Image (cartoon, rainbow, N blue to C red; front, side, top):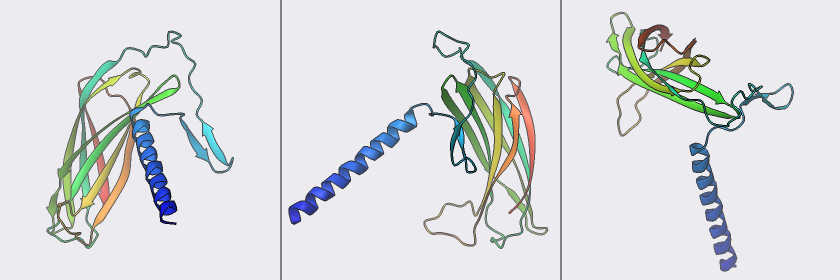
Length: 190
């Protein structure tokens, strides 16, 4: 009986290790099929793919796109977080390029600590997100901009409550002209 339990434990450990290695290998590969889950149709539907205009099978040459996205936050603090708690403002920019049957993701984030005005329950911050992206289809790509707010932002060994976390969408924009600064604003409550 002990031998059977030992064999079962070894089999489970091997299964977990195999799943872990498979998951790690999956992270390093380009994304699989692009699509969405349609609950009405009851399944995963593939997004239509653009026809392959590059029969050689080689990826198009990448072009470097650089610039800065500047996100200015105006925050109303309505939560019961401590007046001394720091608020972290984070801006994100994400691009997913579709090349043939593969998808490639690029994501950048930047964070700062907000300046709080406890007398009127507000906070503000400006996040500068410099980027440098090698894009094969920059003229067709779009950038999805988002944000996160966290309070308290301090890293401690124990949990600090009350706490607040919010995530939001800012905009979907074309890839900005090379070398420009793109301003965005967020009005949020925390």
